[in-house]
Amino acid sequence: GFGAVYKALDTSTGQQVAVKIMSLKEEMSEELAANEILAMRDNRHPNIVTYLDSYLVDAELWLAMEFMDGGTLSDVLRAVYLEEEQIGTVCRECLQGLRFLHSRQVIHRDIKSSNILVGTDGSVKLGDFGLCAQLSPGHSKRSSSVSTPSWTAPEVVRGEAYGPKVDIWSLGIMGLEMVEGEAPYQREARRRVFELIERNGPPKLQNPRHHSALLRDVLRCCLQGEDDRHWSAQELLQHPFVTSGNPASSLAALIISAKQVQEDWR
Image (cartoon, rainbow, N blue to C red; front, side, top):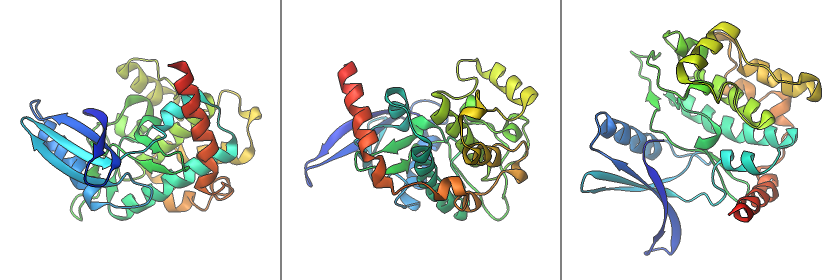
């Protein structure tokens, strides 16, 4: 996201916290910082990283939030392989957060593994709200293109009006990322990514026969070519691939193992 994140100690409670430091010098940075703070402050949910406080320090805004000791899902994917059951569990936790946001007319707009935070207790939470958009009765759609290229829905690429379901496309791309280890076209330049998404339509699994019919189907439901055809978060939470996931605590061993692998690399 926009700004570096540091681990800090809250001396009043003795708890570790995460502090994101955002420079307010660049154009648009004030708007992005305010956007992130308001989105986190106003949308509290077990699957959303908890906002604690914010401070203005010279030309910087310091955003204090809960510290997630497992790092990001991206860190986990670099270190370990996820089984389908674990992928279903991660999807369910993300979808619970998205269902809540979408019910409040908020689009995250940057769902990807590096913006999903995990804890060694197995918790999975949406983070990095710098690009989110609040819809209003008069503006039930957006048309600006802001998300990370590989995870961007086709309707956003085409400059069409879009709603909360663009987050579902991004979740589907993240599903592919959990299976394959990286997102489709991740190594391509931004413009090239958009060309490939527009020309080839929804990305597919490299070896579909190696994966269950339920996994293939849930990805199909997320990666529809049109916004209105993507399933909603509520619908996906009832999909058998998602409902067959285990409690979030079942991810604890995987996240601890991934953390150990990363420490061994250092």
